[in-house]
Image (cartoon, rainbow, N blue to C red; front, top):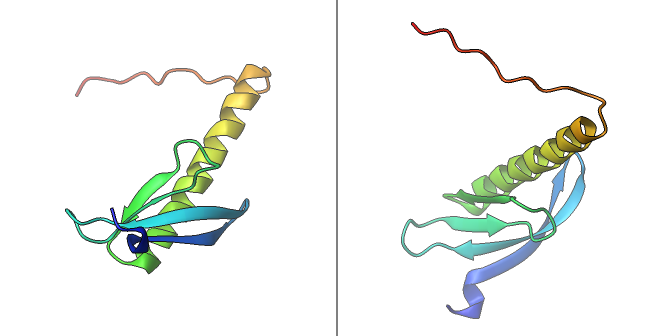
Length: 87
């Protein structure tokens, strides 16, 4: 992989700014992107602009998920499985 296919930039979200790494995706086109400091925050976009928007959503989802997990472990909330009714 050529070094010039990677771009690093900071992406702003509702929860702060995060360093992200954008890499050109040769097979699908567009850009694959990760936020190394946010476990599970990975995304893709056809353009850099779309990839930035998508990784911001992925970061926010990961942060919100961690908040919910912490609240559940602390006994602050209870998550019950949803019952599905057969159609």
